[in-house]
Length: 390
Image (cartoon, rainbow, N blue to C red; front, side, top):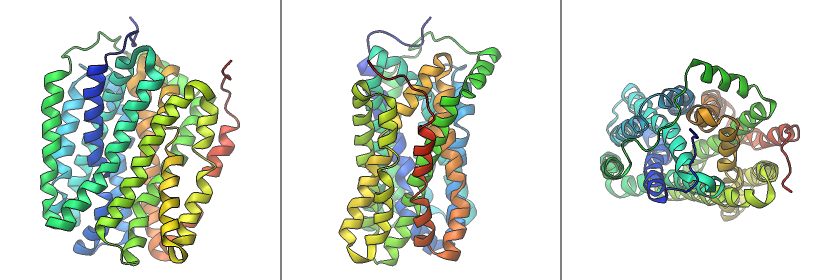
């Protein structure tokens, strides 16, 4: 039996997309708060990088494992568990009174984000049916927009009601949990369950040259995005911008990224995957560098370039996942976890050395080098063999 249907189930996909948006709100929730938390707990940029690396490990590096298990278990389990974990624990970070407690909240809250994604992405692919290129773009974009709303939400709460007001962030998570539990079918599909030979096949498939390059490109994009969204807030704080302004900038970066992901998925029908992947790499380099260069000279231009870089770097997100899922259709949860999670998690682990290097050499100097990282992705892209559309 196929893992995809011909006619899309748009009601189920809409609820799943709403869940994706809310779940990713928690993924983006803590980023603008890190300068405030660092000041409260008196922790360095290096420790901040370590904490966010821990977050990446639990939310992203473990995603292939979660994806593999989700391909075996009933298909809703991780969706519900992940939503509850992220909603409750991320909302408690304002109550952290030391680094250890902060690390626990971040680790298990981020794990909830990681639990949700492979299973939800696999189901979204199924519910999209023959319109997968269009509707998967919508699903992916909803998550990116949720990630964008996270900084708006957290910075609004903290700037108006104090750090402990983060507890109110649990409310949308509980609401969407109840909605998904009521609306999503208990057994939405009789998907083919994978066994050990299926997993072996997936691993063998992943040593396909195109998928290796795709994974590398995902890591390159992730490293650029995460480095700038994590450490630019510290630069802005040094320039006396408020926590709310910082949240708005991070939010707009991700919001336009969500829009780009949807547009990229739509344009993929006309241009082909390789052009979409290229747009998400090389054009972002001058925008990232300009973000740093113009911060002192023309701040508003720096802000615009920062937001445009978010649009460009996220342009191919849905295309990346669609290519991977088409390569291993019997293991969509696993490959979604690899491309959409593991690759980002590996990039996130690099935040620890980036944090310590930034503490030693300065944030601007370190980010200036990272601004050129997408060039390596563009070079790798030239070695991909993707059939052109007729």
